[in-house]
Length: 357
Image (tube, rainbow, N blue to C red; front, top):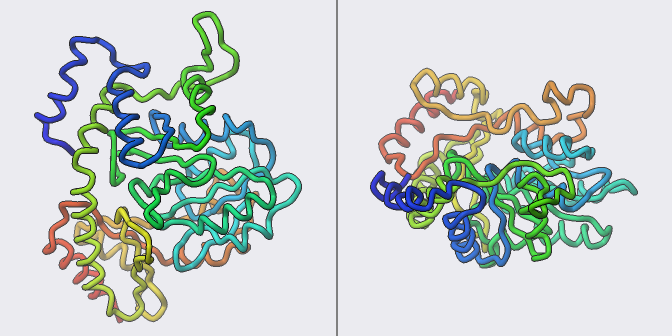
């Protein structure tokens, strides 16, 4: 978070303008600054990432099936389902945890209209392979980049891939606006309709041309984003240090698979996921409970798989995505934030080591 003084200075002008929402000056300035930081030409802001994702699906006027991953947060599949589309689950790459392009192509049929990959933990999907498949079958690509703010591949921001990329600015993310989200996109013609969709479908003072929603980012959240953007590079740098300390302490332990940084990827160090293999001698759940007993709160992120959610009972067969099942049953994301001290990391790792047999 920015200092209280920095934030109050940023919002002070709102007491003069009384323009608190509906795409005011802070909103416009924040969009401009985000385009510059993400090195992209087109952006639209939202109250949250989920609304942004639904908006992308709405604006593309999709019908039919959308291929995605079961190894993600609920929002990804919920957005597909809530827009009247049918989610189809492809398995993941067990090393990157992102959707496996080879599995995507096997699932395409005449009803497939789009692919919705997820940059899981900020790990960049196999963008080139996915786009090649999309081009071959004339499919739209919408990236769930909720974890990937500031991430680059070959020097290019992930904001510039696919037809849309969705970012979440929730308070738990590397970059936040308290609550918020955004869409980046290549086609500037989408901008007007995106703004109309998030404002009830209103197209003029006396015109409402379609059924839209209400998901406009307010000025206070935009102001928080403006403040946090000033500090984001420092935030990521601190996270990189935390990531390195974890890797040094856990990297040599048999039975623990730690995340590896890929070449030509500029990471944001959003999460530190580890897999507890059978060789470790203690299950993921046992480690989770031991950490919890010591006041350390890790996450089974993502468990259960979306395909096993109660709300999707009997609709999917998780055995068709064995890699996702394997990872989901073994993964823990460890505490990860910029101000996590070396001593705290040492204690976390000591607690984990005590579980090993």
